Length: 439
Ligand code: SAH
Ligand code: SF4
Ligand code: F3S
Image (tube, rainbow, N blue to C red):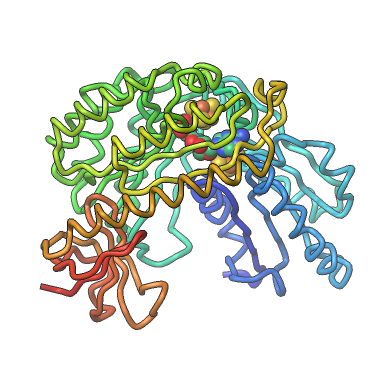
């Protein structure tokens, strides 16, 4: 193995985590991945543009990398991901010490681009977005030995154009990966010790359109679930408008599918949902939740909420609070609306002041903490199947695992249980986790 060192900083969603892993795999013949930038020969930053705050993380990091490069002029610095795609050449002009700017599609050309830079070429910008881009199948060992969990991207891009969202502009048009590639990648991960796979896409329910060879998402779930040795399968994200009965029934019929669904609702107000171009009403969303719970009574639900979307009144906001009380999600991810480049809503004139957005966000989080705690307390005394992922974050001498419904559980136990499915008796509930002991 060569002595050259690669450091990757990853921001944003699970797709970016997947993409960063692919970068490491693409480059592993030349570079070993290291945990910090100090000694690296190559630094790659995988960026996110979903909200302004996410975009700022790039700019707060680059100063540090510029200093590293002044000290070591041979250092190669590349910026990839969604901010790179959004900014393109502008990023190279603004940050002239960068060597490579590449988008989510451009990352597959990294080995050639790095060779070109090493050969003395000037900065490279690879941010073209092909309409018919097909995700290449990158084979090879994982940089980390025997990880318990892994992601498999099943589709690229998004065609939904929700009016607040930058993703369709930075990830391009929706294309499904061929089922054969997905299955082969899943099987190879399980061979390398992976116990839990999460299928990734911006809207997995529409899997099977362009590039999918006709099998729908429910068919894909069933196919991947049968990989021998796979303890658990999950997927994210589901768009409510495309969630069909066939996928709901998988939660009843596929034994190793985790009983958890992340179903972003964004708002409880029909007026706001309409202006977001979400293509479902509050009533339709609630009806899907009712059917899901009919089919699989122990399913846990989580969601995303945006507060202070342009034009959101106090009444609209109270509709969202009412929906949270009605559904009782296990957990929510709530964000203040952030205007994004290229998007339709960025041009809406009826913006909500920052302090109102922030107040609404706090109200939501406070309400949800009570709901989460109440739902978690109802699990105390139960015995649950927990897949042990690794050491607990709070106390490295303890273990962290997850239930089928995706609750994080901390428990005392030996490291040898990592990667094993064990029965845990739940003893204590918190807002964001559970505590228990081995049965
Ligand atoms: N494809 C997924 C979500 C992708 S982005 C879906 O359709 O649900 C993850 C979350 O970020 C979104 O669900 C939304 O709640 C939030 N988000 C996206 N754009 C945002 C913006 N401009 N401001 C605030 N939150 C945003
Ligand atoms: Fe963004 Fe909407 Fe596509 Fe999700 S479905 S990625 S929120 S445009
Ligand atoms: Fe961020 Fe791009 Fe994911 S904008 S949320 S990294 S698709």
